[in-house]
Every structure is written in structure tokens, then in C-alpha cells.
Amino acid sequence: MLLTNIKVPQEQVSFLQAVRQGLGREQGLFFPTSWPKLDIDALLQLGLVERSSLILQALLGDELSAADVDAMVSKAFTFPAPLVSVADDIACLELFHGPTLAFKDFGGRFMAQALAKAQAGSKTTIVTATSGDTGAAVAHAFYRQPGVQVVILFPKGKISPLQEKLFTTLGDNITTLAVDGDFDQCQALVKQVFDQKELVEKLSINSANSINISRLFAQICYYFEAVAQVPADKRHEVVIAVPSGNFGNLTAGLIAKALGLPIKRMVAATNSNDTVPRYWRSGQWQPKTTVATLSNAMDVAAPNNWPRVEALLKQGVISRDDIEAVMVDEDDTVLGVRQLSQLGYLSEPHAAVAYKALKRSLHQGEYGIFLGTAHPAKFKEQVENILGTPLALPEALARCAAEQGLSQDIPADFAVLQQALLKLEQA
Ligand SMILES: *Cc1c(COP(=O)(O)O)cnc(C)c1O
Image (cartoon, rainbow, N blue to C red; front, top):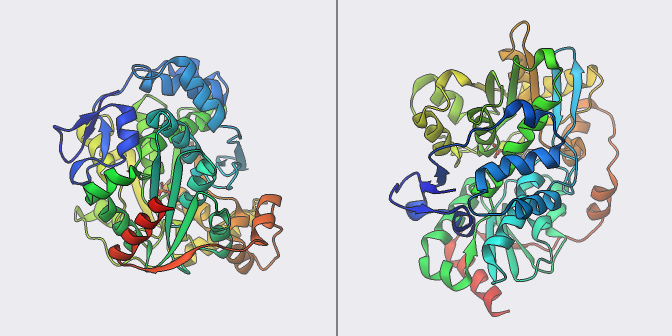
């Protein structure tokens, strides 16, 4: 599939080239300009792996054989995405049954497969910024993969201690840097790395955050899995609410809709970092300073996937009415976790933001799905504070919570980061 740099449309690359490069010239995002036609009804009959492989073959079939795509999907999607009913007309799509207990395992693991194909055995260094879950998913997906060094930047003290332990305890080919700053500063540092052409070439640097197109493509697949589990009589009434930070997840849902999946409307749910809801109302793009919230993986003031949403609108495959943008403040987030608990469903702040936004949007007769992007135990402190009851840790989390974090502190200073990268090259 040919992908075009949204900022510099003359720059066109293949899928594998885009996977290798991450970002295009002038930090432009790669994106398709047209979409294949799919037989939706037939696809909805299939299981997750078989269906996902066919969807990705439709997108990548000109570059990768059906057998290759099949193998990549089977290796990446090794866990389910169940739709769990919480009320008559509302269900949670649980995307947290992978190794790091967050939806980013889907994108991270498929990206690891795609990059292995794209690199064809040569060395590479992955530099990525995380507001929490991307780091863990990327670290686990590439842990001990031959020829791959991973460098993860995260805002020191701004992600939950458990989240941090999930990726700072691995060591080996995983280097973690605790940046004295917020997530937007971490992201800005990574962008600066990609501006240094010489450095990028010397270390063969790649980014694995939500801008990498392979992650988005993988994420399209679980929207199909969601609709496939909706009762047949409700399939044309589906509204999906997405707890959003960088807006990769929402973009993937919009692509699924553009590919023909029956989704009536997407609800873009944010916490108090509400650049998109304000933009949707006023037409003014005015990011403010990032504020810390309970749903900290969504504490993003300048969401870097937004140009792709604009591209879908410009292509005419999505219309403005397909998206509703809703801000959910801290009080309402707490209320959401409590209300879900009263319904007998244990949740956490990110999903609760989507749940509350969905409740505001949903009309009579519609069927609402909110995405469960992380396991409640990943946000143990917040959930325990809100509900006032202790929460047990699943095996995988309990194990790494007991281990020693190995991250190094650095200031939000590009020169320091550059030195760290060069040192890694010499090691
Ligand atoms: C990353 C993340 C989000 C936000 O997803 P985007 O694709 O960046 O919008 C929401 N919830 C959780 C738990 C996350 O880790």
C-alpha cells in the first residue's frame, strides 16, 4: 500500500518503508489516500485472528504475502478482546488481556512483527516517548529481539508506579530514561531526535509510538471484533466511545468505519486535556499546558495523531457528524468508576472517561460500547482511592512490582538525550 506524507504529499512510501521511518519529512505523518473494499458481513462471521489477517491482507497484500500477514497476526494477537456487557445497552470492549494489560499490546506486538519484516535482519534503535502504556507494550514486544535496542522516555513521577515497573525492570536491550518534564516534553525530545538526520541514520533510529502506521493498522482489527460480538439486532446501532490521548485509537476506529464497519458514531472522550472537544466546538486549535489527571495515559494537550483524523475528513470517507467530542472532568471520572462498580463492573479512570462520555452521547435504541484500555489493577492506587476497597494484583503485575526499576534520570534536554543514544551505540 502506498502511503503519503500528510505534510509533504510528494513524499510517498511503501508500508514497510513507513514502518522503518516512522515519521516522514518535516515530521509529517504517513497515511493512505485510498481504502480497499471489504466484505463486512463475511468478515464478521470469523474469529479474531482469521478476520484480522484478512483485513490486514486487504491493506498490505501488495507488499506482503497472505502467509506472511497470517504469521504476523498469529504471533501478535495471542489474547482475546471480549465485549463484556455492563448494562442492557452498554458494553465494555476489554482490550487489556495482553502481556502488559493495556490495549497498546495490540499495536506494539504487531509493530514488532512489521518492523522485523521491514528491517530484514539489520540493526535498529527504537526511541519512543510514553505517557505510560506505550512504553510497556513496546518494551515487552521488542524485549530480547535480536538487533533491536529500545530507548523509552517517560515523564518522571507522572505515571503510576506500577506502570513504570512494567517497563523499567526489564533491562537487557531496554533502556529507560526518566525525563524531568511532562509527556509533551518527552514527545518533543523524540521529535528532535528525528530532526537530526545524521543521528537517525547512524543509529538507524525508529520510533514506535502511536505515530507508526503499523500500530494503527493493527488497532483497526479490534473494532471489527467489537461489532462481531454485538447482538445481531443491534449491529446497526453501535456507538463507540474511545478514551483519547494521542488519538491513535480513535483514528483506528474511524478507519474501521471508513472501511465499511457499521459504526453509527464515534465518541472522542478526553479528560480535562480537552484540546479536541474545544476545537470541535470553536474551530480553534488551541492546546493549553498539559494538566495531570486520574486518567494519566490521556494527559496529552497536543495529540499527534489528529492530522490523520483531518485527513480522513478531507478524503470524505468520514464526515464531521461521525465524531462527537466530549470532555469528562475529574469529578465525573470518579463518578464513572463508582457507577460502573455499582453495575457490578470493576473499571479504572480511562475507561470511566469513555463510559461517562458515552452516557452523555447515547440515544434511545442505540448500543453503546466504551473501550477498556487498561486493566484496573494498572491503576490500583486511583481505583482503591475511588472505591475505598483493596484491589488484588494479577500475577504478571505482582511479579514485576517486586522488582528493581532500572531507569536513569535525565533533564528535558536534547543534548543529554543525544549523548545517551551515542553511548548506547558504542556499547
Ligand atoms: C494510551 C492510552 C490511552 C489513549 O490512547 P490514544 O491512542 O493515545 O488516544 C487511553 N487509555 C490508556 C489506558 C492508554 O494507555
